[in-house]
Length: 361
Image (cartoon, rainbow, N blue to C red):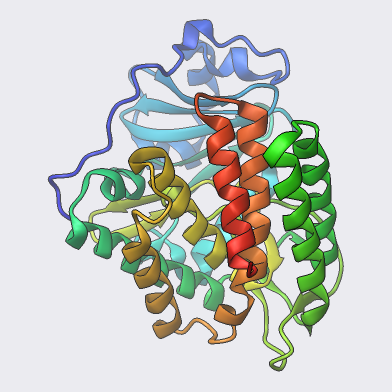
């Protein structure tokens, strides 16, 4: 990946002194360098980071009462993530992915999991240096964007082929249930959002019976259901894969000779079309926010799908994309409604319109 593109530094990140979250019981201990150092003396940590002379902590991302991500500097850099509840499963899933071929030496990989400290509810993992895919898409040229699309597609195709299924099963009926709840919330806004969310939900509900039962695969994403099968296309059975669910350019880093996907808090087993649709919609959301047009990154989206299919992705994925993309559109519109940042209503309406277009006017 071209070295001329670098991830910008977010000057608005909270300092350790202003993060006070009783919902994450161990956070105060972790943000105290002296206290944290006492917990980082185990062999699994010291082997990865070297001898620690001084511990420094910088908060990177904070989800109140849920989790907090931060950088730990002790000899070398580590990324730490502390949870409100005990989450050893995240470390275990990452270990299984390393064993499946996504270790730090692989071209397509994840951050190396270092340790999970249950007393702190703290996950430690490798800090991957490199350019963020989302930044390249926004400020890079067409050639750089094409490289991003191709490498993300190849990573996802390999993930769907090799990753062991983990987590809950994603069921189309549960997706519909979630879409219905989001529709009700959007209807409270009235006006175009109410009308278009109702139309989109009706089209999602109409599209679901055309899918037939197929075996599932591993997935990375929002956990919404349990079961034994997922609804898929009437084109014959196809094994499902690991599912990321939230797979997008904002979770991809290009290190030295590596394409690395991070953030494994949520993982599922689902139809691979769900991940593919999610990435394509993430490009459209970026395009809408940055360039004012949902179509501004269409070239990258088209190349992503073509590369995914040409890299071993099942050809039946393309036939199931409309349903999953439309469901992602409903979720994105709901997110805009909940956050209500500047220009939110226009973006929410654009997402609903894209969902309607995807399922056919």
